[in-house]
Figure 1 (cartoon, rainbow, N blue to C red):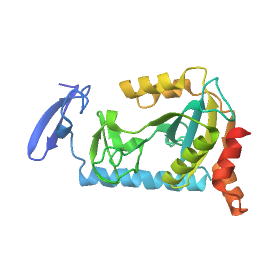
Figure 2 (tube, rainbow, N blue to C red):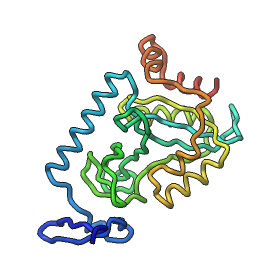
Figure 3 (cartoon, rainbow, N blue to C red):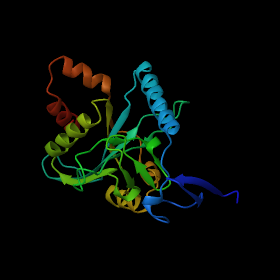
Figure 4 (cartoon, one colour):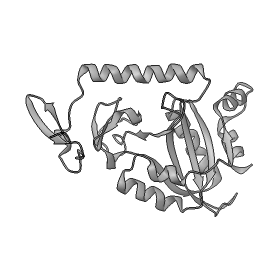
Length: 231
């Protein structure tokens, strides 16, 4: 019984194994609802992290753009965007994977809000924007494609704005085929473990403080992202 726990779904009490995942082993409709106290604690944690990051002058998020060995300044090249919350462990380490709400993509609502790591668990996630509960396999965690550098710069620009203009930009080259890694990640829903293993030292970093400095000086941000990718 030690590996079991009870939770309530409405007026019904359900006994669940700690190893079970909602949306996979059990119906997503059986997923436990957060109590008002749990929602309040989550909100407090997010506010504390925002304050910590603001004090340390650190961007809240990271966008990482992976390229493989093939790279061209003119031709379309394969790559992958992934999204991370910076150092969400209070001792200062440990980036965690974050996702975007799939509501708009699948036509259920207009939500595209970021879903922090703390809103994930038991094989499902609760969007803090639309309040919908999603299966882990429905979440948007990577953006794969084959694009020119100009189009990759446009994607960076779009997701930079969706992350509240509060992120560092990392450009990395992986020895593995990043599309295969991302596909295995989506299949296994490892919480970023496979992508973490594929992440290597950044070749280039465009930190938030530099982005702010450049835009305050009048630089066009989309052109700055393009210059960053082609430098």
